[in-house]
Amino acid sequence: MALIKLSNNGVKNITSVGSASTGELKFISKQTASSSASISFTSGIDSTYKEYIFYFVNMHPATSSAHFTFNMSTDGGSNYNVTKTTTYFHSAHDEADSATEVAYQTPSDLAQSTDFHRLQNFSANSDDSSCSGVLHIYNPASTTFVKHFTSTFNSMSYTSTPYSLNAFTAGYGNTTSAIDAIQFKYSSGNIDSGDILLYGVN
Image 1 (cartoon, one colour):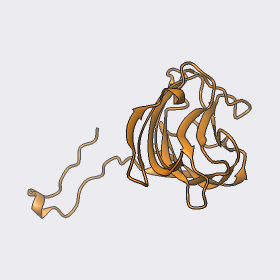
Image 2: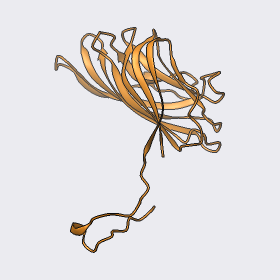
Image 3: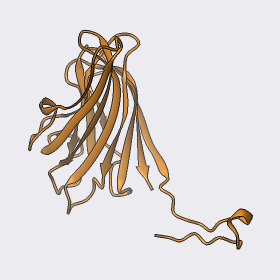
Image 4: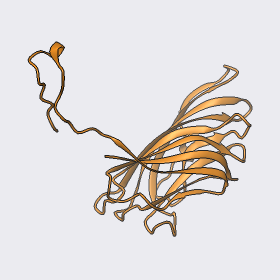
């Protein structure tokens, strides 16, 4: 780790500091959904960065109570079927202030499965609803280690009444092959609208 050398004797007298490494975000690409069956990133994920971050802004499903999901590819997007082991828990609070919950969600995790992993459950499709969040993928180009990821999402979700659902998921793609493409979709119906932005961490 680089040390920052102060140019003055006292902190209160600092006028400049030496250079230091910063975990700067580098914008790679953006895709906008418009009644899209799925959104795939098939370029820009390589050995350039050790960490990649996806930002999701107002992902709106065409179908109510659909789950927002993702999967990874090792063949440039020909197949999205990487074997994964994952976890999922959430906190929730409804608009009526009548129900709250913090719970592990067993139906939403995977154990050595090639299925798409849920990033957010039960998104509502009312006009004012959406889900937003962030997904981190760590060292996807490694040919030594499995591929870890973490995510946090919040949505207006729906059962009998709308509620805020904050989902926390994590896991790993159990492959030592490089991940070079990632796909996002709802478990049913299209992605009606929303923006997905991809950044690398320098």
